[in-house]
Image (cartoon, rainbow, N blue to C red; front, top):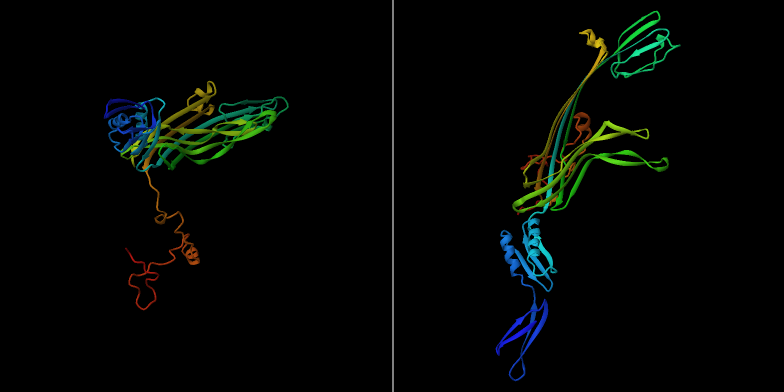
Length: 409
């Protein structure tokens, strides 16, 4: 520090930099009259004023200065308040090399439970009518296929019409068969009607601290062969099922900012492939990634899907398939319709720890049934071990209230 002697009774001190020094004063008789310890610290009044101006709702933030740092203390209502206070202090600090020490506490509940409901309804309707036929004589076999009903091993020469090697699916039925002499004609029909209904309802719940990510998955894993060098095969496992990951941030006034990513996946054999002779199923996924801001206990539908697809295919024999009525014997038709409805609803809650003395665990009140209850009454769960006693007891019996009397306060 430097000083300037203004008058015999006045001294003006100026600081050169942060630090601690002392000042000694002598009197007229050259004796020490006073010693002062002087600490030079940055001026933080400007930062404190800006914090009150920018964050008027945060009235408990205090600013302390040290030699080369600024310390923020107090309590705020949310983690966003901490971030805003640090940003203001960093913008208005005296020197760029000054450090900012954060000792601010976040008040209120900081644990968040996210309740997610995933509901999906999938309906499918399929109709198929396929007509195929095969004809041959003693010298050769002639075939004709209209629909994709199966395969016929074709050959010529020494075969006979009665020894046709036919390979069809189990759904094939013979429509009619004509045989006479060395000639045979067989017509096949494949008729099928399918209706399917799939319902998925998942309610995963997760708890985490404000600003921390939490993950959850309920499902399984399936192996996938991965070819390696030198003809070896490694196995990798892929997850499927209901998955959830979210990152909450508690704001003021019990509001919660939630970044959530739910996912529903299932095995799909139709979209699978074959690796090294092993059939590997595909995966059908429905995934949502979004950010919402809700109050404690409010629900919000963050995603919805309505899908309706129709596919119809007609295969027919040229000319013969065009004949009215009789043309149905020479064509194959396929009709497939799929409808899917999906909705995802999220509900955040601010939670506190439970008192385990007041909570019941699953199966805690289970009682094994007696022989009479199991064999005669067919009960899988026994009745209460102790029947409730009569408040006044029963006259002429020993039944009544028993046990230690605990005074009520």
